[in-house]
Length: 396
Ligand SMILES: Nc1ncnc2c1ncn2[C@@H]1O[C@H](COP(=O)(O)OP(=O)(O)O)[C@@H](O)[C@H]1O
Ligand SMILES: [Mg+2]
Image (cartoon, rainbow, N blue to C red; front, side, top):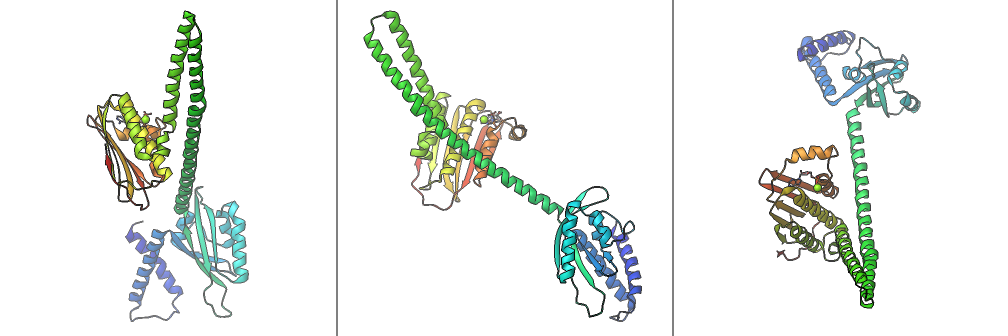
C-alpha cells in the first residue's frame, strides 16, 4: 500500500470515526483542521505500529466486542474484511498448545481486575506461525461504565528466533569447549602412557638385548639381536616424537615460548626450512587454556606450511599488545585461496583452519589468515588476556 493509499484509507476510517465521536468537544476553530491533525496522528501511529511490529486492541468485555489496529490484523495475517474479532473466535488463531494458558491468564486478569502479559503462538490462515506477546490493562472508568480493557500485541517471532539461535550457538560453544578440553586431557594421558609405559618397556628390552649380545657367541644370533636393537631404537624414537607431538612437556614445564621454539626447530629441520622466531614482551603468566590453544594454532599452521606451502622460510612472532597475546606465522610459499578453503572446510572438507578459528574464538579471540598467491601465507591468532605484568623480551 502506498503512502497516499494508506493516507486515504486512514482518512476514510477517521471520517467515519469522527461521525461517531461527534458528541466529543472540539478543540480549535476549524473542524476540518482538527480532522486533519487527527488523521495525521492516526497515520503516524499506524506507521509506528508497523515499524515496531506492535499492534493495539480494545475489548468491551460484556459485549465481547474487540477492535484491532491494522498492525494487529497484519500480525495475524488477516484483514478487517475477513474477520471481526471476539475473544471466543480469536482462540481459533491461537496455537492449541497455548490456548489454555491464554484463557487462564485472561480469566485471572478479569477476576482480579489486574493487568496481564501473555506470550503465545498465532497460527495464521496460511499456516505460518508467529510468536506474540499480548499485554492488557484497565483504563480508568467511572462506576457504571461498561467494563473495558485495552492493550498491545507485539510480534516477537524474530526476537525468539534470534534467541533460539543464540542459545544453540552458546550450547555448541560449550560442547566444543568440552570436547577440546577432553581432547587435551586425552592427549596428555596418551603422551604420558606412550612415554612412560611403552618408552620404558622398549628401553628395558634394549638393555636385555645388549646383555644377550654380550653372552652369545653365535654369529646368526648376533645379527638378529642387532636387528632387534635397531627396531627397538627406531620404535623408541617414534614413540618419543609421537608423545611430544601429542603434548610437548615444554608446554607444561617451560612455557609457551619454549614449546613453540621446540616445534619450529623440529618441524623446520625435518622440512629443510629456515626460520626466525621473535618473542616480544610476554606477560609473566599466560593462562593454561591460552597457552594450549596458542600452541595448537602454531602446530596446525606449521603442519600446513610443511604439507601445503612449498615454502623455504618461515617467520614466527609471539607478542603481547593491547591486552592481547598474538601469535603469527608467515611463510614464503605459494599461498592459497582462503575463501575457497573456508567454504570447503565449512562443508566438512578439512578441519585444520576451522579448528584454529574455533580455538581462538572459544577464548574470545580471533584468527586472521592472509594469503597471496605466490607470496605466501600469514596466519595470526589473537587471544585476549587480562592485564598481567610483563617479562622481558627475547629474540631468536
Ligand atoms: N600455509 C599454507 N600454504 C598453502 N596452502 C595452505 C596453507 N595453509 C592451508 N592451506 C590450504 O588450505 C587447505 C585447508 O587447510 P586445513 O583446513 O588445515 O586442512 P588440511 O591441512 O587437512 O588440508 C589446505 O588443503 C591447503 O590447500
Ligand atoms: Mg591442516
